Image 1 (tube, helix red, strand yellow):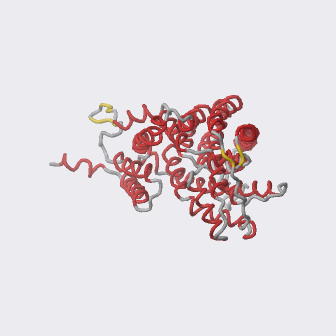
Image 2 (cartoon, helix red, strand yellow):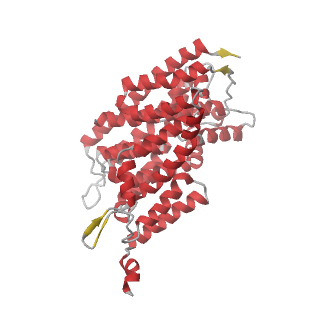
Image 3 (cartoon, each protein chain N blue to C red):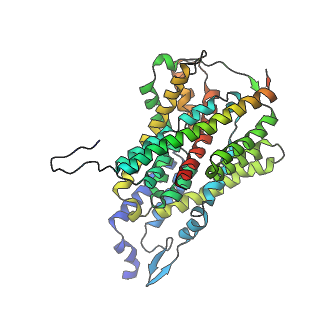
Length: 373
Length: 55
């Protein structure tokens, strides 16, 4: 009879807390719609891996090590970096670089909004993390889940769980974080700046050449970023070449969906009580917030700096859209612009800066890896 | 940044070598991103000028 209660009797307080965290992630995903594609599988995974002797994660049963199915998936898909990279094909196929190509200057706004990554690295070092751990924590500021996973996996795999939770949670919280940070560093007059509508038809030739040029430039200057950039731009080439619509459709839908299911569930291997419940996790969650705020501030201040030299001023809020949380950040900026002035339409510029942030964040990830290579 | 509590223990025990590396990383990273995206900016400006039409 006692066999039936073995699980109940051997459960620890930490495991119960982790189950509650899993439940919270499921709640946030379903009820609040915060990144549900990742938080729901990850929440359920967290619940699953914290049952004692569940057989889902590797453990010793009767003095014999039994490999759990989630560990098998982790070794296959995450330890090899396969899942995050495959997701990039889908993301590339989903992104329309048209708004960016209409205003190439927005590329620089994406670059400036990566400042939070490096600022957070310094903060993490001050709080006692070693430089590799700090770099992994800083990459939360890339505002890009797969990049965060990819970098953390190589520099500090033991922090993968909290880094992933922080990265995806804050991406979902962009509509709350960014307006506060933007208002803190802009005046109402600056937020009222209107942007002229530019009507340039981007030819198919330009759209096809763009991903190839990005690969060439990144390949020569930051070759370590090529796995990320290459897969992202491959997906975009599928979209833009015009002869692979079937593959583009698959990359945008089936591929991304399958990998998202596996990624969320598999990452929960790192969501066990012994790996997650410690002071470092709390600090990492806090640093994630700093990273997003400083990304936003960096982007806005750069836009203000550029305005010093421009005749046609750019609404500095566009700089904040340079973080990679796509398309959430662009929508937030448009909403803020219309709150100040109902006839201010900055969405195309914000979307341009936002997709530029996508490129900048993968380059940043590659450069971090390159620094330690 | 170092604050000594009454007990004499340091609140932040900063590893200055790591901090220096962090600063170096900041310079290297931001410069690298701006170089890559700066080149892309020039390339895209050229591409759009040569191959696109203004409506």
